[in-house]
Amino acid sequence: MAARVAAASAYLFVPANRPDRYAKALDSGADAVIVDLEDAVALPLKEQARATLAQWIRDNGPQPRLWVRVNAADTVWHADDVAAFAALPLAGIVLPKAEDPKAVGAIAARLPQGSGVIALIETATGLADMRQIARVPGVARLAFGSIDAQVDLGMQCGPEEEELLHLRVEMVLASRLAGIAPPVDGVTTAFDDEAFLAKMVLRARRLGFGAKLCIHPKQVAGVKQGFMPTPAELAWAREVMTAVRASDGGAISLNGKMVDRPVIMQAEKFLHQAGELQD
Image (cartoon, rainbow, N blue to C red; front, top):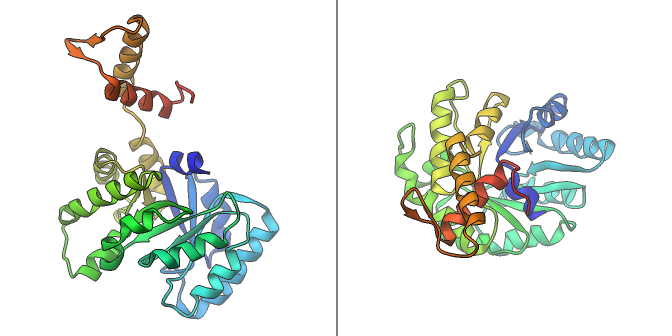
């Protein structure tokens, strides 16, 4: 499961009360789909949406790319949401407002082998405890609920959320220390602005994120492309590996610069992402 999760870069949300969109979302090119029982579903519709989604999964068989965002732990729907989906053949559960490592662990322990939890960090408590949350067995990834985090913290961020930069870095660090996949960056709400989306994906990639949440199918292609190495990076990686093969174990230099192990590892990562290098 870990390799599959780490390879996913575009996570597309779809409302749980729109079963007509489930298959479309899975066919959109997204690496993973998050069917949302939380923010996307009005209060009177939550129980029906839960039942509809569970039945759709039972009717359509294993869904290794499908995640379910349940309602938060402090809501009346949470326990029934977890009970409905814990044993179904899914990628796993997305837990909003993840705060308590023990509560996260209790959900992860109920999931079958091959499934996991994405802990959505979007409150002050979650941010303070995300290193512990990331270490919980069964947590596949952290994800940043940047919009909710701003509200919880009383912040008023600009369009690029520069004020949250240090929290994003901390999330990358928490994930690395726990040995899990790089985290998933928050949504970009302007789904018709391709240039702005590309800028936000580039920043996420440079910070060490490995994926991004998408709120519209239009964003999927741009997100996936943004997390891939550029042509220049691939050309550089090929040069590095050519120099490595020609070195016979000796010191390596390329274009006047020494090539040490971290440089080789970066080159291998680029080539692996592009499918030019196998594990």
